[in-house]
Each structure stands twice: as C-alpha cells, then as structure tokens.
Image (cartoon, rainbow, N blue to C red; front, side):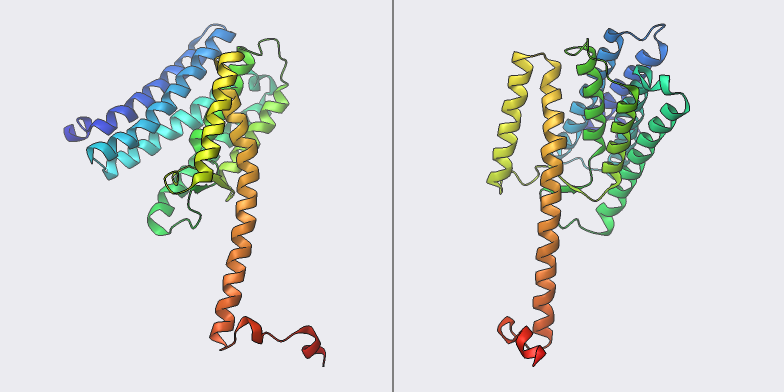
Length: 273
C-alpha cells in the first residue's frame, strides 16, 4: 500500500479528491448558502477536474500505470464529478423542489456511476469504433458543465433568475447523455486530425475571449456551452455517418460473399421483369 501512496499519478488523483471533498464541505457546512460559497465550491470542482486531467498525463510521463490507479481514479471521478456537482446544484436551487430535487440529484449521480462502470468494463471487453470520440458524455464534462452553470449564474449572471425546474431538467439531460451512446469528441486524435485541432483552437479562442471580455467564469461558461451544443451536433452527425458507412460495408461484404460485384446488383427493372 505504501507503494501506491508513493506513486506520483496517485498524488494528482488525491488532489482531485481533496478539491471535491472541500467543495462538499463548503456547501454542506455553510450556515447560509451565498453566491460566494457556491462560486468557491464550483472553482474547487473545476480545479479537481484539472488535477484529474493531469494524473493521466503524469502516469504516461513517468510510465507508472497501475490497475490500482485506474480504480482510484474512478472513485475520485464519481465523487468529484458526480456527487459534488449534484450537491452543489442541490444546495443552490434544487432543494426548493423537495423530493423532485432529490430525484434529479440522485439521477445525475446514478448516471455518473453507470457511465464510469461502463467505461471500465468496455475498456477491457471491447473497443469503441469511433476514433477521437468517446461513448456518451464524460462525467468530467457533465459535472464541469453543471458547476460552470452554477458559477456563471452566481458570478457574471448574479442577477439572473434561473428556475429550479430548468436546472433539474438540465441535470436529467446531462445524466442521459452520460449513459447514452452519443459520440462526444475527446480530442485524442489531435495529432492525426486537422479538423479536431481546428475545432479545439477555435473553442479555446472563444473561451479566452469570454473570460477576458466578460468574466473569468465565462472562460468555462463559453467552453461548456460550445462543447455541449456543437459537441452534441457533431456527435449525432458522426453517429449517422458511421451507421451509413457500416451499412455500406455490410452490403459490400454480402455481395462479396455471394460472388457478386456492385455492378452485378439486379436493378429494379430486372426484378420486375
């Protein structure tokens, strides 16, 4: 066990977990839920996401991958991007909905847990066919998008009145996207995909503009909005294209198995005759 404590990637995972626990302590222990408390909790969750991103990079740089680290990362993710964002949103407005707010909070956490479990199983059982895309919305992006909304609404948009029902519906939608099979870009194909590099560069430029011109919270607000909207459109288009391509390949294989070329396919006139 001492060896796991001394493994550098696990330090970053532990830092991510610390940020999540600290965020939960702020919203659950505060005598009054103010905009400052919510903003601080959201920033902590976002920092947790940064540490979560770094632990994998450190593991590759140091060549210190381990099954223990994978399981530890999943546990940290369910706390950091499932439980923490959901309870921050609950402390913000969902508590006003009573049982409905509890159900929305539970749904988000449950979907995050199912998403992580599916990812761990699929990583060993089968390969996802769409390079550069992941299956469903990641828990990191779902939790990050949720706390970004809370931060923007309590910072740049402090005067905004966002109905609790709207937040609950958003959480239900984010939960569904996590357990769905809609492809979302993970940008793991940046080296070989100029389009992915262009999209990422334009997205970061828009985030920088929002953060500098509007408010620091809008760096993440613009990023989350772009990723969820354009990412969803890109995912649906990619899924349709892949389905048509798979169908075309299946037809070609069928013709090849029958000893026919595409040109030998009987026309509708010949069939009617």
